[in-house]
Image (cartoon, protein in one colour):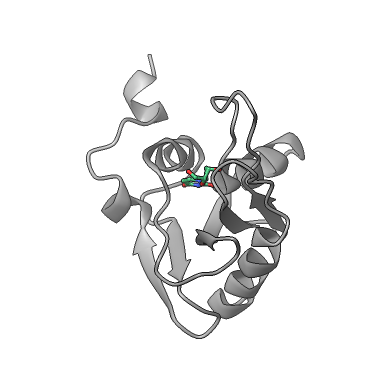
Length: 136
Ligand code: THU
């Protein structure tokens, strides 16, 4: 799957966002090493803290389907589905990525389906804490 196809899937996922409190909509499309795409959107809550980010929605859907290995993720976000700038995943989502992904896991951020840029997990979470640190 090309990066552009994954970005297109992230834009479609953003349309499903449930964000009545912030109005900030986020979509993610995660490609597993098995070749399947798992999409996710942010899901907000009236009590705020249960809110789940789009990236984690995608990861948790995939993990609960038995996936454990991932290649790349595309993410987009903006107010009311209006993407005007690059959206960067939050720290909590970067930590969840570090749980399941190698340092070279690719994170694609997009302004449009034609303008997108790649980072590695290592670039976005340098010196991170990961399962390797806790192994006994
Ligand atoms: N959000 C995400 O979906 N992903 C992130 O990485 C950061 C923030 C969502 C959570 C909330 O619904 C909205 O964006 C505003 O913070």
